[in-house]
Length: 224
Figure 1 (cartoon, rainbow, N blue to C red):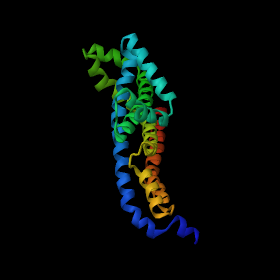
Figure 2: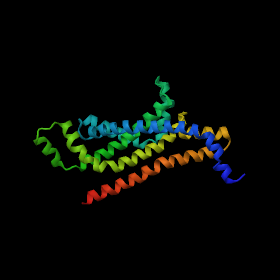
Figure 3: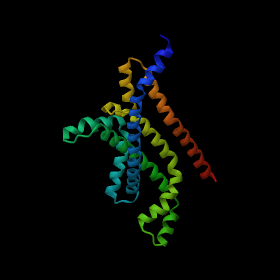
Figure 4: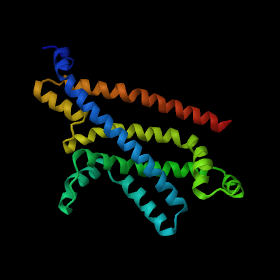
């Protein structure tokens, strides 16, 4: 049997395609959920760290430091396998979404904090002179200016989250990797794994290139 028949068996790939597409749906759903919730939570944590009372600021620092220090796989296993001992049972999707959301929120908080701190202090003073409240100032003055700095690294973090969705197979979520391994076992051929790898590349390569373009654009805008 040739290498093509082993790794690129078109007949096996055709039969495995429905399974891979089901897994792709779970992967994309998980990635979008984590990105939306993690981004929103990260912004709130960043604002808390910068402007909340000191106890809350310390909690925000502790959260970002601890979550960034714990591997995603360890956090995922703790949520799915350890929480039931405390009477809290999460589905595989909920556990994976929670873990990825927590991790992205921690990294987003640091990125947003850097963006806000890079905004000239005079913007706050000007907003205050116009009688704008804190939340209006953040929403209409500070955050729009910080976005130019925040978007490139945040886009990179979002790409990492989509890649980390593959870890959800550890908790039996039928994501793309899980479906590919199941298909590989079912057809006794590794072609479904190659197919899954090609799907990941097809999704993530354009995002990686987009991230690079955003970084170059932000660098040019910053040096003007």
